[in-house]
Image (cartoon, rainbow, N blue to C red; front, side, top):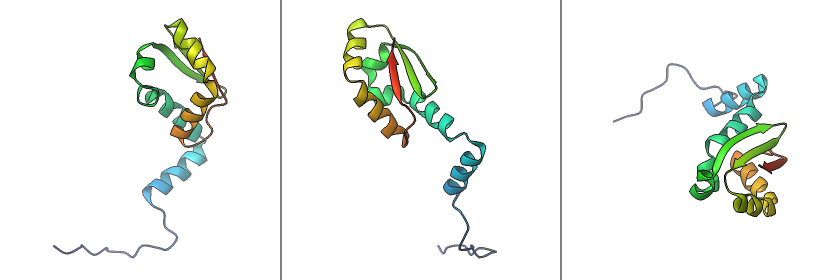
Length: 104
């Protein structure tokens, strides 16, 4: 099977679909909102099932992630490792999306 030929040559300065989407998100200024949503949607995968099961609500306001937990001891444990949690979440998002995490 041979590769089908294009009707038109690809320009040197043309963008891939991924690059075009990245530019589009920048123009609409929705990249941070997308990354915030990514963190919330992937909370269980990022933090693990034991923490996810004890999380009752998550939301982000002004670069702060608010995490409502149903376990007092877990809240204390996560507060002690807050810097690691912020670093992990920002790394997963691929950018500095969060400045702080508040465990409630």
